[in-house]
Image (cartoon, rainbow, N blue to C red; front, side, top):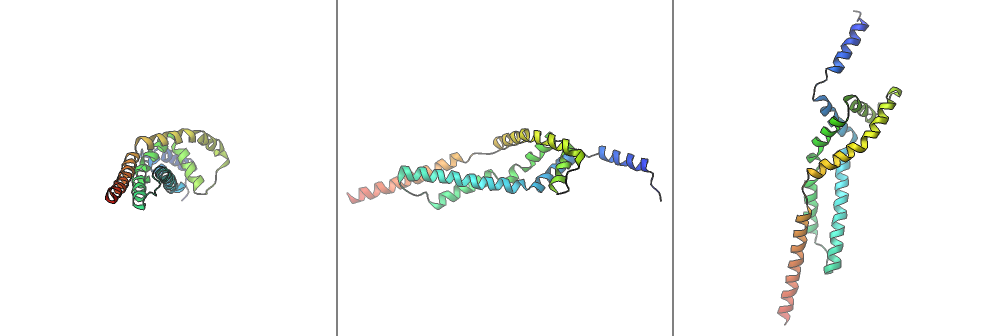
Length: 178
């Protein structure tokens, strides 16, 4: 059976234009999976949490000459791990990608990250994607900021309670020696 080339190209054109409304969102999720952004995000969270704990530990050590206990450090880590878990943000970031990029741009990035290469005719499209990346990054950071709780209040309570308990113990030792 011989296929009419005009009919076949018309079919392809119609199929390309009849994309479902969910397709950009679905493809944006696929792009996030391919780029492994979730793992990268969680690595950043772990590293930032370590820096925060180091800062808290340093402050406690300088002000009270004691080491912040492991259980408090673990509670702080748990808070940041829960508040900044990738699952909390992945759907919102996929929506941002679907809004900011065209379906063809998302598909181009999927092909690029799938190691399918970049056709020469798409180099201009790829360059325009690079100019959009800063706006996408800003919007994503704003989304994360607006959709995340803060651990600082809880951290402060934990550390202050530890210091108060420590001071009370020291006070009771002084009183018992007198």
